[in-house]
Image (cartoon, helix red, strand yellow):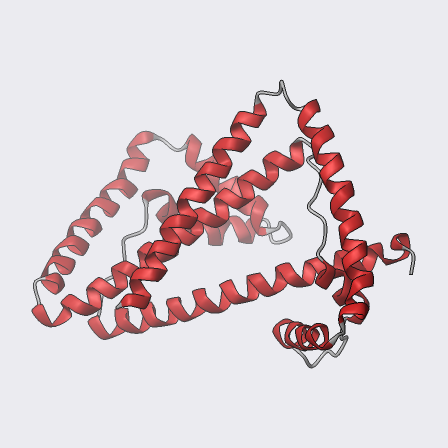
Length: 256
């Protein structure tokens, strides 16, 4: 079919691919969280004390919500935030002192647990998992920041692959199948195609790629003197650095 008629399907296919990546990440984070929570329970680890502002929020939330029952959570949060900013420093100090006292108790309890030789391995694993989760959070944030930079500069979007185009025409609409199941089935169908059957999708992808390359060159010439290109380059380097750290962590885990 003409390329124009398949644009919506192409976009849907691309969203499906992104959704599967998110599904994998969600599954991993869920497993990590479950493991950490289980170990926290086994070791009876104390909870990290809440910051002063969060303590104030928890105290004020019921009254603000009762006075404004129709407001969404975001606006409730804005009201509480404004109240906190206007709060007298002496009153704020009460919450800071509560936090400080609880933090001293927390550190004392953690020191006692860490001094137990039987808890050493589990504590180390918990620390590694928290570090891994923090690294992945930084990675997602860096990706988002770069995407926003590129969006602001109207950078041409990357073209879809031959498989994406094929998937857009063969999407399996069963409500009882997960995104991963649909993707697996589509992958099997794609693998089973003959070379001549794949060729039409390969050619379409090639045309999209040629157009993308051409648009990208024009965009680079247009942006040549734009200072924001330096920001984009910094964003690329940041993402690459975090990605290497994640890859290194995975290699170390696999070797253990």
